Length: 169
Image (tube, rainbow, N blue to C red; front, side, top):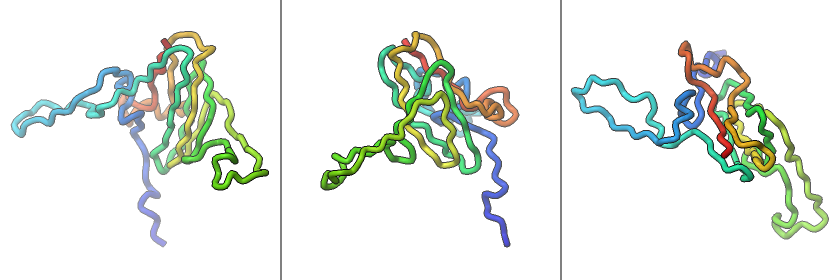
């Protein structure tokens, strides 16, 4: 039996919005201008046009969609000092509202499996929606990162990985 092609796959680089730490802290968007053929200057390290730093006003609720695009690795993410309410998983809400179902389905009980947590574990291909309520949170900088320490750097580099800041103003 021949093994599947991804059997020997090893992930060495992890990102948030296409960037590794400390580039995840950039507020400004970056532009990518390809070099002319005779230009020997190195390419910029990031061509991601969207900022990865998360900024929220105190008292607001912040919706984060956490997606693990890896097929072989599990990641646990957290932000010390912030609680998450899991409100969706796998493109489904964590609550069933019978009034929104076709025909109203009288007699159907609403099921709610949303829950509060301070960390979320994502398997390969999984996506989870969480809400961070900043009502009772002091203003400050909260580090959002993976607790899998081997993914706080990319390959043999001292930087990169799954980490950014959530700034509550």
